[in-house]
Amino acid sequence: MIVNSLLRHKGREVVSLKHTNTVRDAAKLLAENRIGACLVMNDDGGIEGVLSERDIVRLIGTGNGDLDQPVSRIMTRNVITCSPDDSIESIMSLMTENRIRHLPVMEGSDLAGIISIGDVVRHRLSEMESESQAMREYIASG
Image 1 (cartoon, rainbow, N blue to C red):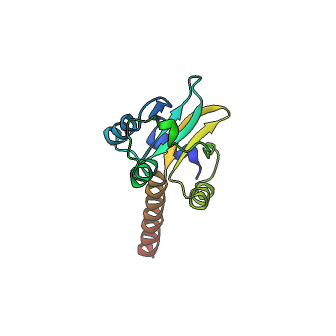
Image 2 (image 1 turned 30 degrees about the horizontal axis):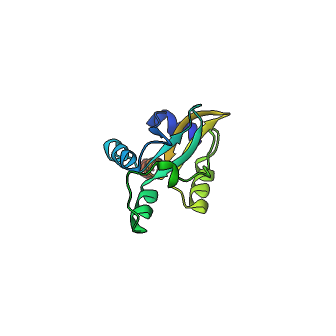
Image 3 (image 1 turned 90 degrees about the vertical axis):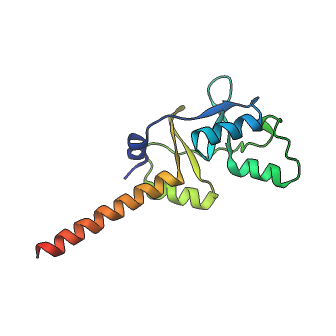
């Protein structure tokens, strides 16, 4: 199974904001969309960073809970991405090794979508259920 299969199922919509938006704006955006991260885009439509719940929690945990500062101050700038042709197994390893929960999917220089660890887990559970059902049917057939 490849990443493109996940995107076909979940869609390619990406929630994003600009680097000038405030952390407060970002927290509201994450809550409204019930997501754990969003992309921070530059004026040319390229990815400038990723802002996650973890980034916001880290800010508040330092005692400097200034939610009116721009997201560019706390976002993760070194964005790790994947491609639609990457295998689910390879992105599971990538997410685990880098301790990240969200991966933008790039088709060349174009943003194709974003996948989360939740998307991957849902896929694996579905896959395991299908395998289990196939095994039960095989055993029942004799």
